[in-house]
Image (cartoon, rainbow, N blue to C red; front, side):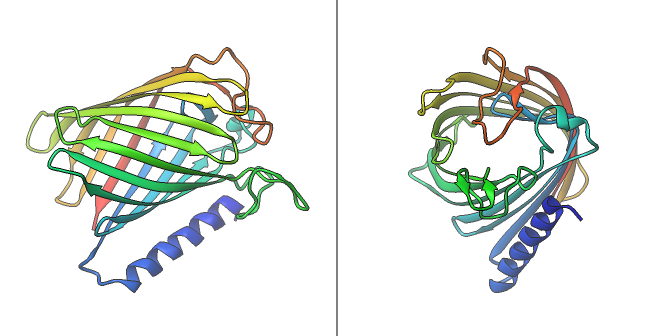
Length: 256
């Protein structure tokens, strides 16, 4: 079993422990299992065909999320050395008024196949070069048509600041079917004097409701960035590249 799978099982175990520590009726749990023909993050491709499972827990205004990227096969090696990733998110979201909600949190990005242990951050140490990073964020979401939101992120170890705006809308086609559009646009500021760049992605999905608690979807995504070729993530993650183009995905959502 590779380290990504071990990390995934560890995060799953921690999530299940969190559920057991609280009343079953007060914790909301949702899961997603997605298959994507590319893994593109902020306009940069990190892997080719990948499975992307996620577990999301919420308790009142607090939430914990675990998200994984598990590449299939070896074709992702032309992009990064493996493309495996685990994102652990903790946050708090609450309304400011009837229209605006605020969201604050922090993400720990783990890259188990880039010579990094679970606690190895982006620095030289006795175990070699770490690749994991920490990124706090703050955002505002608006309860208006298109559900717009805007977020500010800062990665302490990559020394980058990102601003991203999002919007989405769902068109009901029948009692169980909908056509869902989404998109985001953002800008990455490299505070260390590297490459600043603009990125964006648009998506279109056809969703079908299986039950009160489950649904499936399939769709297309198009996105990329204005990076003039080459890597944008520091030398700790060698081989990342611009990836503008079209890809597709399918997935299953469930709530408990």
